[in-house]
Image 1 (cartoon, rainbow, N blue to C red):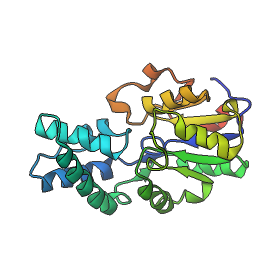
Image 2 (image 1 turned 180 degrees about the horizontal axis):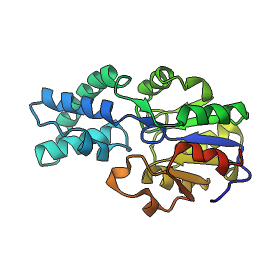
Image 3 (image 1 turned 90 degrees about the horizontal axis):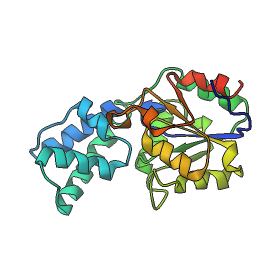
Length: 225
């Protein structure tokens, strides 16, 4: 197993990496499309649309439901309905993946600065972390509304480097999708991919991360902890 010897901070994707959020997202999509008299995609299909932020996710859902590219006003209405319903389902429909809380606690106890870098709309992020009992582990949260361009662009990772005052080789980025790995590679930071995430139904190994892990707690030995 590869080891990362000079890591001084870590940044994590949220959906599919720390949090099994697909049930809440899928429920909100189903309810939003139902209000528009469109068919519900359900959990399995909705899981393949997660990772590029809510706008892209709803565009994918509408394209599937309509059988064509949606019009701008259709996208606007669907996104507004999604936000309404997701505010009601986000916490009930989200759980931590196994060993996430214990691993984050161990990393935090070692004094390593931890950040969240997610394409999820920013207003949903902090309340979700709080409800799951992991908010106190993170000293920096960058949501999808906090940067001009979302992952796979490296802008958010560059923000983390600047705020934490570390060099690219000193930040480990942990994600589950090709967007995460592409962003980390573009920023020049070491990266780890979790195999249990959402990655559009594709094996994450095809994105050639520096390391793939099957369980979250494997992060600790990788870091020599």
